[in-house]
Length: 142
Figure 1 (cartoon, rainbow, N blue to C red):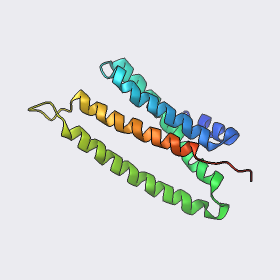
Figure 2: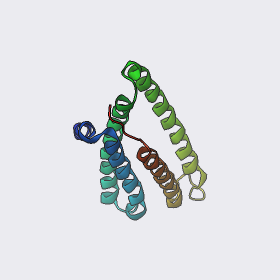
Figure 3: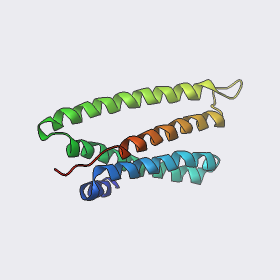
């Protein structure tokens, strides 16, 4: 639903803006966990925000490559980006799983709220890194 909006934004002002909006929304949602982790309505709102953020970020990634990679290399670059994105999702999921399994309620396999907070802190950190990298993108007139 938000992918067309993200695409129009990327086309009008550049894909970096779409990436920054998506990452900012994701960062806000992850940070929001600390205030809303005990509210079903709050958590549902955060899931919606993360979904919107993902639409913006995924739309931006492919468009960024189209903006910066020579036309004859676009296919290879987009293919490589898919492989790297899939590998990063696997590694990120593994790290989150280790965090979730590391601190559990004694005698159970249920993660503590602090463990969930650690996962969100990791995501907030990765969002901050993404924002720094995105701000480092230099646009040139072609």
